[in-house]
Length: 216
Image 1 (tube, rainbow, N blue to C red):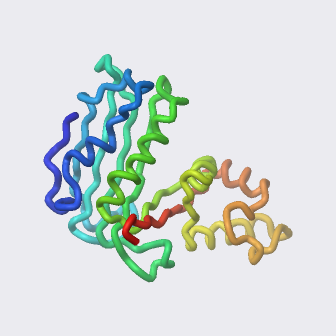
Image 2: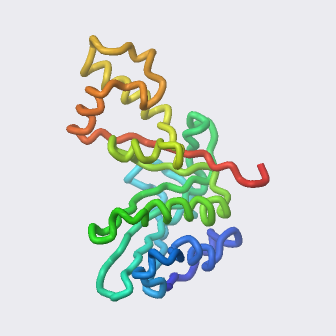
Image 3: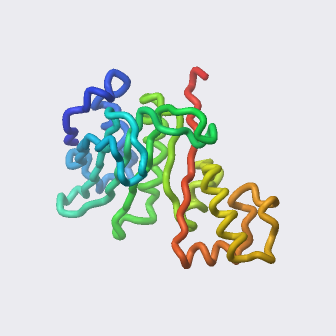
C-alpha cells in the first residue's frame, strides 16, 4: 500500500496504519485485490470551496483511494472523501458546527460489482477511520436510487432538514392535489409517483449520519 505523507492537520488522531486498516480488504473472498497496489493521496482543499459555496476551515483536506486487482492492470474501486474541521451539522439543523466527513465518491468497476466491496469499505471507514478522527457527522449527496441504500437499517442515514424542505416544495409544486406536505416527515412519506418524477429528473439531496463515539 502506498500512502502519501499524512497531512499534519490529521495528526495525532490519525496515522498511516489507520488508513491501511481501513482500505485493506482482508477477507479471503477479496484475495484477487492487491493490498500492495492500493494508493492513497491527500489534497489540500481551497477554503473557498466553490463546490458547496461555503467558506470553511483552512485545514480541510480531500483524500483519494484507488484499489487495484492482483494482476496490476485492473482498477477495482475508487473512492474520494473530504475531512471538514468546522462544518455545519445537519443533525443540529445547522445550529452547531463540528468535524464532518463528506462521502464524495465511491465507484466499483463493473467486473468487481456484486461482491459487497463498497459495503465493506463503507463499514470499515466508519468503524476505524471516521470515529478515530472524532467526526461528529458523515454527510453525502444522494440520488433517489442511492437513498434506498443509505437509509436502510444497516447504514441508517437521514435526510438533512433543508433537503427535506426542498423536496416537499418540489412535490407541492408538481402534485398540488397530492398528499399535504405537512404529512411528509421523512423520505418514506413521499408517494411512489414523486419518486418516479425525481428519478427522471435526477433530483439529489443531502443525507447525514451522526456518529456517537464509544465513550459517549
